[in-house]
Length: 391
Ligand SMILES: [Zn+2]
Image (cartoon, rainbow, N blue to C red; front, side):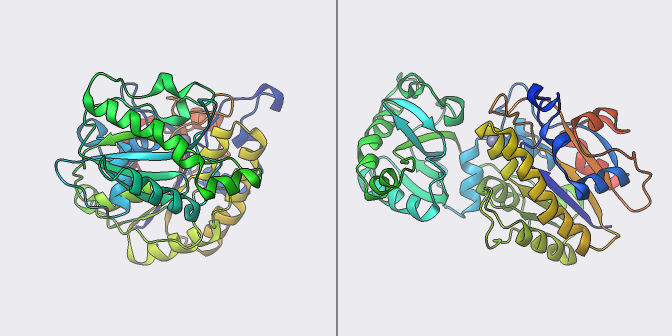
């Protein structure tokens, strides 16, 4: 048996009053996802833990069967693994967002979704200015990496948690030399990046400047048991964002670079579908992650989220149903909710569906309500790969 698991990042939501009490998944026209759900069985998946960060890092580790209590060190190390960055045992890896600040307030955690080539220019300037503190690496768009010998054990705040707030209140607690040094670097980055040609041009074009380096999500490199040893399945990961690719690399799964995969609305859904179906020829378990619904949740746009789900359905799920071997088991998961009303991740369980040849379906469309009615009931995230294999 071969398994395809498709994860819609942040796709689950709360009912919205203005939409007649419906969620984006209930409003979106998504015939292919609904077909998978109807032919399969549904349930709710608990992918997060109250005592751990509410993010895709923890959720995707849990879904793949890795206990974050023993292997989660931070988001930064996972993304560094994706890029094959060499990190010393005495070094700490941070995620570095290029964010937008205006009059000391955080306006945008994504620096106006700056392009990767623009980010490269800004990152190289940061490397010139702060080589004594650490090294910066370009990732995808606003998602970059910072490696330093300084800063172990600090508590850093994710920038998407402080949009609209004064950043000065959310810097590292200045109670030791490392945090004071890193705070100085973040504050100085504002004037340096604001004057960079990339940001001067962006302002002129009416785009948000990516004018501050915000470091967070730090930790030392974790050690994961290989996925094939853990589950007896040879695995592949199809993803655009470094976080998910990094988990795949650390779990020694096959992680191809998919052309046109951006982690945003302009991603090539078609290429991701093609790579997923192709990977199934050689691998037993293909984990296909789509970031775009999460971005719509953070933007707080119900309409955008509905449109993203519809595009995913047509261009990714539809293509997969048309081309995949009918003996493949297909599952739809959501790593965590990113409700448009909250504009951030929540702890709630998420709906999931498992379709497998010969399985008696629940006959329900794919949404939160069906998840609660589904025959699997509430399942812990750590159990989902075992469940998909077993049913
Ligand atoms: Zn998110």
